[in-house]
Structure formats: C-alpha cells, structure tokens
Amino acid sequence: MDIEYLLWLQDFREAAGNILTPFVDWLSYSAITWLLFVPFVVYWCVNKKAGLFMIVSLCISRFLNGIIKVTACVYRPFVRDTRIIPAGHKPTGYSFPSGHTMWASPILGSLAVLTHKKSRLFAWLCGIVIILVAFSRNYLGVHTPQDVVVGTFAGLLSVWIASLIISRPERENFYLIAGIVLCILGVVYTAYKPYPMDYVDGKLLVDPAKMMLDTFYAVGMTTSFILGRWIEREYIKFHVTGLNVKGVILAVIGLIPVYFIVCTFAGSYNWLFDVFGELFTVSGGRFVIGFILMFWTVAVWPYVITKFCE
Image 1 (cartoon, rainbow, N blue to C red):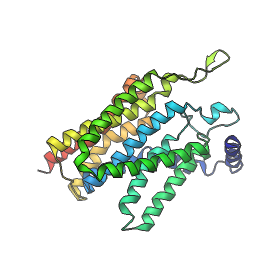
Image 2 (image 1 turned 60 degrees about the vertical axis):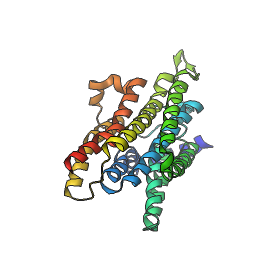
Image 3 (image 1 turned 90 degrees about the horizontal axis):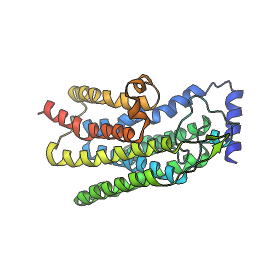
C-alpha cells in the first residue's frame, strides 16, 4: 500500500506538470537548512534555557534517527520499486525513519511548547508545518508514509525527553555522562552491527559504509553538544545578547559557518566536496563535521559573544 500511495502521488505530480514540486522541494530543503538556524539564534540572542531545550530536542532526535535507521536497514522506496522516480535529488542513507521529519519535528515541536501559552495560533502553525514537511517527503518520492509518521512521532518524543532533562538541572551532570556513554555505545553499535548485503546483477545494492554516515554525523553532534555544554557552563557562562543591533549582527556572523556546513550537506555547495571530500564521505569525517557544527554553536560562538558583550 505504501508503494501504491507513492505511485499515486507521482502520477498526480506528473499530471500537474510538477507545478507544486519546486515549493515542496523548497519546504523539504528548508527543514534541514534554514530551520536549523532557529534554535541557535534563540540560544544566542533570546533565551539561553529555551535555546538549550530546542538544541537538546534536536540532538536526541538526530541520535534516535541514526540508531533506528541502522537498526531497521529499510531501503528507500525507489530502491524497493524502480517504478518510483524521485523528484530531484536521490538521497542516500536508509529510509526509515525520515531524517528531514526528525529535523523539523523537534525544532518546531519544542518551539510550539515554548510559545503555546502566548500564541496558540503560532503553536498550531508549527504543527501544520511539521505535517507539511512530512508530506513533502512522500510527495517527492523519497520516503514512505510509515517513514514520516514514525519520524514525526520520534521527533516529538525527543521534545518530551528534552523537557524532562531541562526541568531537572540538578541532574545535569548525570545526563551529560549518560549521553557520552550512549554516544560511545552508538558508535560501536553502528560500526560493528551486521548490515544487509543484497546484490543485483553482481553489484552491491546498498553500501553499508555509506548508510552509516548519518548516524556518525548525529553522534558527532551529540558528543560535541555534551562537551560544549559542560565547557560553557563551567568556564564561559555567557548571557544572551538580546534582539538588539549588536546581537543580530553577532548572530548573523555566527551563522555563516553553520550555513556552509548544513547547506553543503543539503547539496547547495557541492564544490566543498571537491575540497573536503574525505570529510563528507567517510564515517569519521561525518563525525568531525557534526562535532564542529555543534561545538561552534554551544561553546565557541558563546565565548565570542561574551568577549564582544563584556
């Protein structure tokens, strides 16, 4: 039924002359690029605790996504059935659950939790966008309905887990240590678990080495957040800038390296693959990139903010 549903969407897409495809593709793309800037700006400029809540939600969601993917090892729908032709770029990685959905749902879900008392309309809008992002992955032919449904549920579950963690600051050291242990176990599990080795006409259908990349990226992000959070809490202790001129300028500058990292993964800056190709195509490199992204956000740029705002 899932394949038939995707084929029906594909027929509709083609019958409509792909008139909606550019918008749907932009929405899907935004879930893993522009949307990521929101928790970082909140953390730097608006409310430190709220920003941490959003970032913790995201790290938990990304970690869960990576572990579930390499456990389930579900092939993409266009691998399972060659009648499905994705609209645009063919993504790598396993299909279940949807990574884009598990980027969007923790960010928008935590944002809805933070704002629902002040604006129920905005909170409902966040929920609608989560649904639209999930649907976009079906519409583009790169995920099945079960991929996005489970991805949405897991992302929102991450928000709930993060709310429990943030509400108990006295146990933060325990959570940080537990997180490091889980990251180590996640690396070992991902690297050494068995993977399906299916061949078609003598060629490996899906290379397990490439399927590990998303998980190592997520583990790199999570490990870096834990280390960066401890360093910031103990030594940096920055205060948010506020949404003033200086704060906005610092946020924009701080987002520049974030922009290049996330947009390269999204395919906007493929030329970076020619320069740093090894970092993007091996598990260790993906770990390093994820580590740099989150350490910059949680520790390095807050240190810069402290120096400029003294």
